[in-house]
Image (tube, rainbow, N blue to C red; front, side):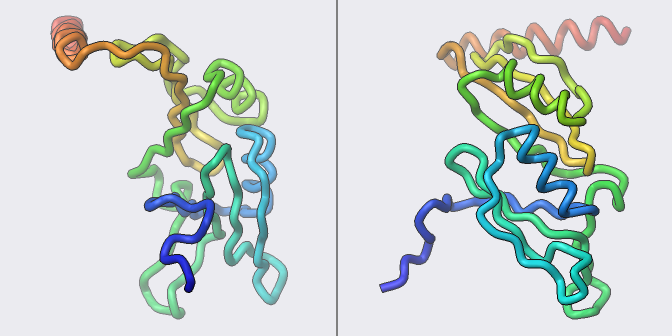
Length: 163
């Protein structure tokens, strides 16, 4: 019997659309230690039709931009649409190491690594292809009340600094 969710997959798997797919695969290898499981190249040899990478225990699927069935529906990269609506989150043993590794590989800092009120050491980068990644190491388990109080204090500080 075929498994409805293949071994090694989770219920949700990110599928990244990029421009310059071959370069993107190499960047993810350098930045996050991604392992390339496979790649399917277009018949003209110019584009990634589908590739699978693995970061830690999680698969990431990837392709270059393309039209669906030659129609008007298109898969576009963040670079083509001028932003992204999704942040990809990585939990890792050493957030500082992976964050700095991503910066060295060509990512840009969005938010420096900081100890956050919800218990994570956390930072954000944007990769050269326009995808935003949050990277964290969970450090402590504050209560829901502690998190709520800290969030309220943070938003209050933010509001007063804008006034």
